[in-house]
Structure formats: C-alpha cells, structure tokens
Length: 323
Image (cartoon, rainbow, N blue to C red):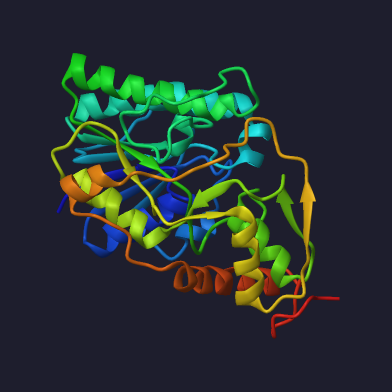
C-alpha cells in the first residue's frame, strides 16, 4: 500500500487526514512539533499503520524508506496562533515548505501544499476564484500568515517547474468540526464555547462581514480528490454557502439553546470583509462539492466542544454553565 507523510499531523485537519489514510490501509507517518497540535488528536492511531515523529519541519526532514505522498499541513492556522507566533508562522511557511519539497524531490513523492483563502487577503473580488491574485497587506499583523502561504505557493510551483516535482495546492476556506481547539480564536470554537458556557458572544465590528463554513469531512474528501487528480494549479476547497458573522452567532445560540447575548468589539486590523469560495474548478476537475449542511455539521462540532468543556469542568454534564 502507499506510504504517506503528513506534516502537522496532530492538528485539526492533519489528524482527520491521518484517519482517512490509516483507514484506507496506507502506511501513514505523522509529523508534528506539537507547537499548536494536540497529540490527543492522533492518540487512537497505532502501529503498524501509523507512526508518529515529533519534529520541527523547519529543520532538515529525514524519513527512512520510500514515500509516495507528502501532505504539508504544518503551520499555525488561527489568528491567535499567528499573532502570538509570527516568526514560527513565517518559518514554517518558508523553511518548512522548502524542507518538505526537498524531501518530495529526493523521494520522488507527490507533494500537496495546504494553502489558504487568506492568500486572497481582504478581497476586492467576490466570490474568490483561483485566478484572483488577492489584496494582501504584507506588513500588517496578519501578513505573517498570508505571505507565508503565498510564498509557500510560489516555492511549490518553482519546485514543480524547475525540479519537476509532482505538486498540488489546495486553498482551504473556513473549515470546522471536531478536534478544533476551543481557544484558537476562530469563530466556530469561539462562538460555540461561549454559547455553551452562557457567556456573551463576541462579534467583531457590526457582524456584517461574511464567512463560508465547510465541514471537515467535506474538506478532507476534496483534499483527497485533489491529491489523486492530475491537476497542478491551486484549487479552492470550501463551502460557498455564505452568511454574515452576526447571523452565524444567532444560529449558534439557536442550536445550543443558549441564553448568551451578542456583544460587539472593534474589528481587528485587516480582517476580511467577505469570504466566499468560487468552487467551479473543484466541481469541474474533481467532481467535488460539499455535502454536509451547516446545522448537521454544527451539531457534531458542538457535541465535541461540549465534551471538552465538561472534561475541563467548565460546564456540567447536562450542558449547563459550570460553577
């Protein structure tokens, strides 16, 4: 069976990819330095199909034996993470991608880069398709993540063109599901945990900014289809069902039955006003589109958040606010 290396394996998306390929019978090597990853996300995976290596991919990567695929998902990926870890975010996007591509060249492995909708910045085109070059502030606080991923895309295409490495690039839009970190600063865990604990839900700005939320199983399916395709240009994977942040907060309150009230805080610097993927390319080339509706996905995700908060003693087992 194929042998695959997944960097960022203990992260939210990386761990779900590990599940997919272990269940498929692949020999999976998970690599993570656990800076933002959680070893509990992959604790259920065991040898002989799964092997974990604790390693910082900004350093030389050594993997014994052959590799068929390399999926590069190592990176801080939430606003809190990359604002607190700006240098590490830049290094993993630049040095980490360079090291992972070097390994792919050495092994003759197919390489897939996890890029992001943040490559489009605060977009002036809506929805965003893959031919749009973006509107990014390179020296703003979010630039460490945006530019790291844009550089990683450029490096990936350079290795494809110059070294003939077989590469893929996925631009990931807002994704949610079990194993998200409760306190990673993204809207789904922030609103979900606040609602479950009966705390005020903090909406930045007036809440008119939009996002499009894709459930993790849909994303993983799209990534797998791209990996197995022959397409080398970037592909958006995300759910085009767009909604305002304020409407999303109201949806969370309704599903949880929470008594939480919405409070408004100042909008962060360079926060995108709109975010919606054009998935025409994914539909036509990969035959992919999302299947999981928002309510179904949120119910699964909120159940996970509830388990975490109960284990932390933040809420009772019945889901009410803890003492």
